Image (cartoon, rainbow, N blue to C red; front, top):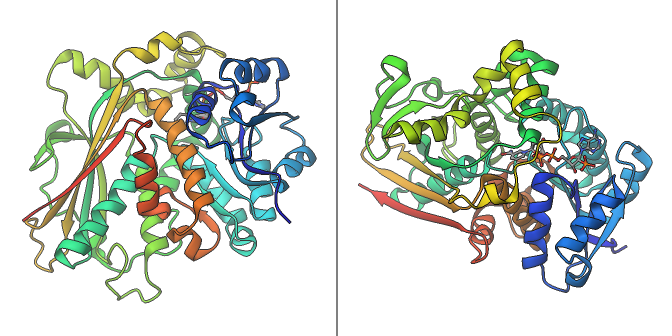
Length: 421
Ligand SMILES: NC(=O)c1ccc[n+]([C@@H]2O[C@H](COP(=O)([O-])OP(=O)(O)OC[C@H]3O[C@@H](n4cnc5c(N)ncnc54)[C@H](OP(=O)(O)O)[C@@H]3O)[C@@H](O)[C@H]2O)c1
C-alpha cells in the first residue's frame, strides 16, 4: 500500500531543523508528499508560517515524541524519516530508530554520538536488513565530507589507476562558522553517558564495520609520523595537525569500508584490503584563523573534563541558546581536501587522487542540506544502499547519485576530483 508521505522531518523546530525547512520549501517539487513534525504546536506553526510550508506543498504533524505509538504511526505512513531531534541517546532517538528498522522505513540522522550508533547497529541492523530499511547515520558535517570524498577518491583511483586504495587522509582545510547549544548538549551527553573509554572503543578503526580487515597494513600510514604537537607536512595538503575530532569520521569511513568490502577477504575489490584512513586539519596561517578553527578542533578535549564541560554547557552555551540568524551570514564556509593514494603494491605515494569538497555557508545549513539530499537520493533509488537492500548504512552508500544531488545549484556544495601521477 502506498505510504502517505515521501519524507517527514522530525525536529523541525530546532536550529538545524528550521534551516532544513527553509531548504525543503526552496527545493522540493510540488509532487513530493512531505511534512514537518515536532512536539510543540506553537513553535511548529511559527516555522511553517515563516517558510510558507503549506504553500510549498508540505504539511505539519504535532506529536508526542516520547510516545512509541505516535512515533510508530508516523513511521509506518512515511517512506523516509529524517530525525534531527537530539541528543539522540536521551531523546526519542532509540524509539525512532527501532520503529524505522522494524517497519522498513528508510531513515536519515546526523548523530555524532558513536557509542549510541554502535548500540543501534547491534540492536537493529538485522531487523533493518530483514525489513529493507536503509538507515543512513551521521549524515551531517560529521561525517559526510570525510565519508563521501573517501568513496569518491577510492572510485576515481579504481577508474584512473585500476587499483584498490592504500591510504586516504581527509583534511579540514578551512572552517568559519558557529556552534549551537544543540551540538554542545549532544557532545556533553556522549561524555557523561558513556565516558571517554566507551567513546574511544566506538571510534577505533573499523569498530563499527560489519567485517574486520585481515591485512596488518591497515594499521600503518605511508606518510612519516607527525612530529612535535602532532604537526607535519603532507604533500598536497600542506602543514597539518592530527584532528581531535577524527573519531566519528574514522568510525563511519571504517563502516563504509566494510559495507563495500567483498565477501572474500583476500579480494582486492571494494576500498581494498590494505586501506588506511586518518583525518587532519590544516594548520591555520594566522592567529585569527587559529581562533576561528579552535572550537572545531578542541571541543572534545574541553568536554572530556567535568569542570570545562560545566562551563561550556551552563555558561557559554546555556539550554535554549540559539545562534541568531544574522550570525549565519558572516561569510561562513568550510572546505575539506581528501588525498587518496593508489595501492600499487610498492608502498609508493606517487599515484594519487585529490578530492576538494567546498561549502559556501554555515555548517548547520550544510548538515541540513546533507540530510535532505540523502533523503531525496533514497527516494530516487539506484544506489549501493538500494542494491544491498537494507541495514544500518553510511552516507558513502548513496555514492555518486548523492554527490550529484548535493551539488544542486541551490546547495552551495562544490566537489572537484583530479588525479596526480
Ligand atoms: N553530525 C553533525 O555534524 C551535526 C551537525 C549539527 C547538529 N547535529 C546534531 O543534531 C541534533 C540537533 O542539533 P540542533 O543544534 O538543531 O539542536 P536544537 O536546536 O536544540 O534542536 C533540537 C530539536 O530537538 C527537539 N528536542 C530537544 N530535546 C527534546 C526532548 N527532550 N524531547 C523531544 N524533543 C526534543 C527540539 O524541540 P523543541 O523545539 O520543542 O525544544 C528541537 O526540535 C544534535 O544531536 C546535534 O548533535 C549534528
